[in-house]
Image (cartoon, rainbow, N blue to C red; front, side, top):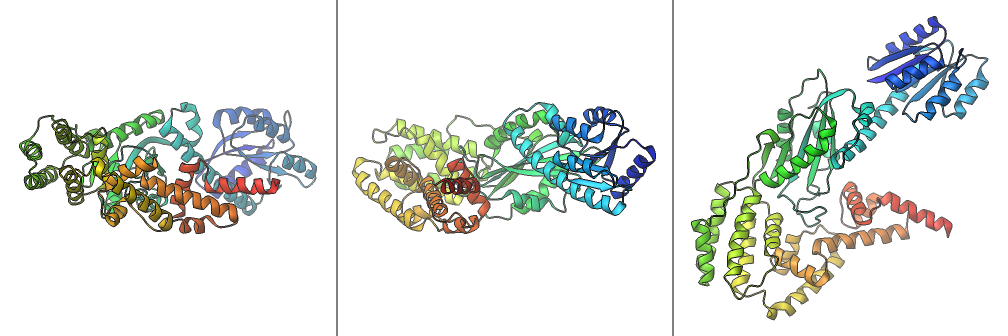
Length: 512
């Protein structure tokens, strides 16, 4: 709803303008009528209009004085001035104040409609942009509630929804995750078209976890909305992909100040309740309490015992049983990781050959790199087999160092191609977790972060050589098929958007 204030000292003209404004659209709400600038200022402070339609020449305080005072308030408002044929000098002064829209008396309906259409479109667009920024800020920090009133005063309830592609990622800006950017903001917006009432505002926002996306539904009073049904429809579309999707829906939020706290609660719930290998919808109010016992099961006991006996055949058989059991029980990712860490911890403690300080991180990475039990089984098999083969002993250091050098060379030559950690693992016949850890040991950076840094370095060089090159073209050259993804990655690495980086280059070149 767009709020309008009309300021005119002659009642018949004021009422005529009021009627014409109401004829334009039912989305216009006239929040005030004033006969001079003083009355207008009081109404502005109370109602915060979006548009002020004002005469110029009025008693007590004229339109120019009023506009000058309003500009001091630093509020978002647009002006339409009404002037007579003999008042051009006043209109010119108003334009110096930044007022670009004016109408001659008597006000023509068609001319007024054209201006209102332009201004309302600008206002809706700006409000959406500002809402997006406010929502982003709300998700990350507390903001005084009075700031919300201008942009969210038409809504009385809110719902947060958190989307996760694949396994839960334990840390932000994880370029190694196989399902980063599984859905874009634009794609989520498109999916809601035709589902939501036009008055319901939905905005998806990227998070620091590259395989996650959070969205907010803002619902006006007296508008019917079924959040569970809506989320189910979105889930059905997203779950058509070949990896699991987890969607969490918050309880009803009635205070915008609670957005940040609710977002944090959803993130914790995602970490605790994401099912490994299976898609699911989790309602915050019905989220199960994760349960994980420290008691070693018979299968886990047999796994540990077979390792102590160096019985590789039995170990592989028991590992298969463990995988099947975990899948049948629909373990959460947290519980699965906990059980594997427990098993590996006992193995490390009972062996003189294994000296592993970061085995818990190994488990987290193995689980994160995979999104179903079949892949997990294969990679766990390779990982545990290395214990039997003593692959982590010093004797293999030279061989793995050579492989790391080969991988670095490969990335430098093939950065423009679609490459995942599993692709590199398969190509060089090395377990992905062991590969990642070894690469980081020698290069002080993970292989996927190295790939990302290489791509961004090349992109920066391309911009320096030709600042006029389109970002879409640069993105494709360095291996990103989606310009949006490229821009997000570029900013996460350089703290500048590609456009800002190019602008800085152009400024530097103009100075030189």
